[in-house]
View (cartoon, rainbow, N blue to C red):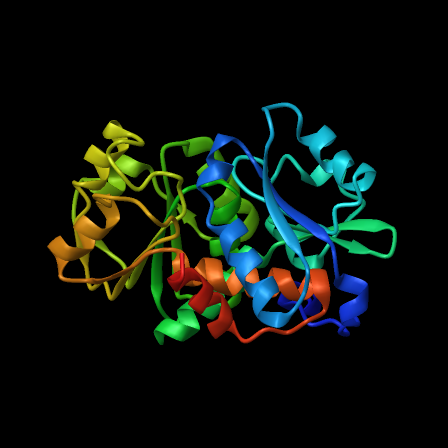
Length: 289
């Protein structure tokens, strides 16, 4: 992973980054994102006049959405589901980490060039560090095969997990991700048919409640874990969280995706502005929402 994915750049003057507009691009779920509130709060805390807004983009129009960043002089953007991979062909260049992962969540200007980054991976790593979970030598089970799952699998391998097992509803994409990023693919039914041994379980799918997918929720309810220390759901704000229920049934610690969101936001903020903000400011912004 290159230093650019960690968000360390030379600070710009406050004058250069005043009165800028930033955004998040996604489907209709973009209006449920906490990112506009978080970034707006942090802009105010550090004395910058940044504005952060959600833009819902229809399927098939991600190219036009990325082009609009140039036309409208948007200072920086987040890209969320389901466009973390689809946005890539429309950018000028990718960071080292984004190239390897094959998905982006942050777009920043580098001169007149639009560059794609993946701060999901480093934000996930920061969240694990905050939790005191040491990855080396641990066995991980990852649900999902989209952009977030790719970032998770990449960082688990980079941190030298003993094993990374990937499973989910889309067997073909799970298999392809395992082959490209490293890990073992297992069909979902084979994971659910008997107790599964893992030190950490990560939900990187978009589903965390029965309302979002009754079928998948029923499958998750069958999950039996052995030796599990931590269950992480990278979504947040879900009532009747199916992953939390599984963790409680197993007597395992559970965390949702808010801390990961805060840490990746901090990295994104640095890429956009050059300003390093204490991660506690982003966590505090979350608490205020």
